[in-house]
Image (cartoon, rainbow, N blue to C red; front, side):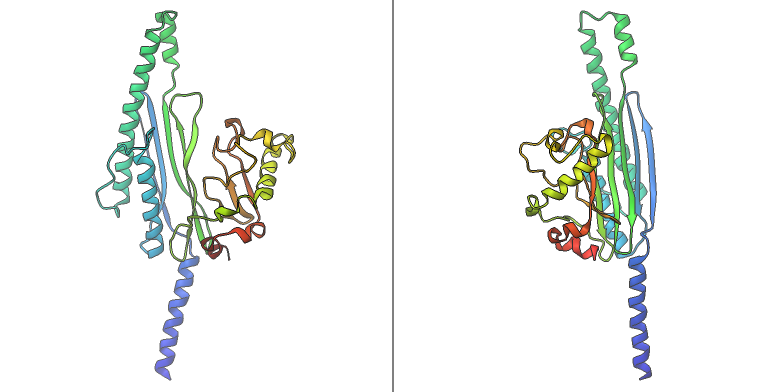
Length: 293
């Protein structure tokens, strides 16, 4: 009996430790880099898990994959890789990030310099622009900007959310927001929740999506109603799609965010709203239900 008691205590201790590990916040570190050239500025801030446990390691690995994918294709208009993936020890986070920062900076410097030369050549060939006007315009020509951001946004006993959001300006009329949006990880397994909503439920979700969008637009000027909502959107038909970015959980429900131009003009910003879980429950995927219990 004494031996059994010892075994039971040991099992209880293991279970208790597991529960404590799951509930404990994911420890992280923010890595920051910044540099600039004649025509480009690059800032990078990446917050990554530092723990060596299975969950922290799995989350960090997925986030490193994301960094490789985004910066490996930086300002790639055709979708091709701009440079090779890091071939060193991925456990050396500082070296990994410095590699992607340096390679990205090289790409930005090269392409922004070419863009500046092309603009100057275009103005040189303009017969209506004299030297003084050309010099004045060139002096006001803005450089490229790229700000890479990866931050931990929420950490609960059941899940942790990291946000991937970049700001990119490449010399056009305005900059834009890119990135992967908010990524939600299961703190029991470290797995990324790939899909929150059943993709076949779009039609059924139209009432709550429309309600959320009306609330988003109405908070600006109060002129948007259910009746005229479609006038504020850019859609091929009346069916509003689920956002390309996965929703993410908050204390009030799932947060839906549409990117610039995804369903509305640039001036509309990034339409975002919260839908209570009880309104979405029939349409949640199994992996979403697992972390929302």
